[in-house]
Image: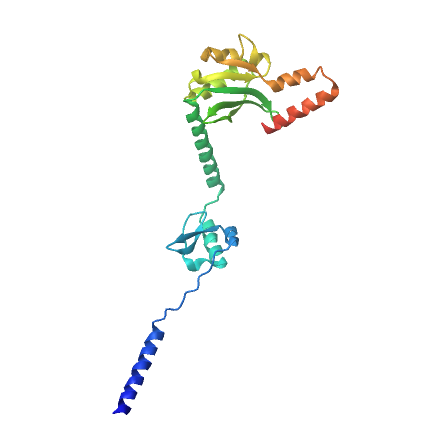
Length: 244
């Protein structure tokens, strides 16, 4: 009797031992994020306590087992291949972005006071352009933006230049009354009291104040100064014009 009982006990012990082994779940190895993956276009995010790669281009979260350099490179390559980069597509997107930036600027100028800076410039092809900058207060800072750069097709008279400026302001649906300042050089076309751009602008906005450009004043003053100081001022003017 004892013999049979000992055998039964051994069988149960073995079964319990076997079931204990089979209940152990193997630990799944997971790769850790490396800063080098950022070169492939991936950062990291945590989902339910698990680190997963996040694409910085499409913001898609990949599976945890995709955190391998070859899989990340393969995914990002497919994403770039699906982006159309033809000349027509790039041109349309540039036009769309430029139009959106322009409309944002117009929206700010419609309800803010602003001043404009006007000048003529000649490019390397000897083509003359009419350039306008706008300055206004946005939030806690003064902002200066390029308003437009238009070619001058005929003579650069005050009326012709003002027509370019006035047509642009009207097409942008900007109120002339918001223009409180105009800055130009000392040329007769720009600064004459009765028949210049500043006089025509004041007819649209009586409260507008004209100021003579400081850079042009320095250029005029440097002509009567010593040669050394003249060289310094001319260098400053060249640098500012290059930046503009």
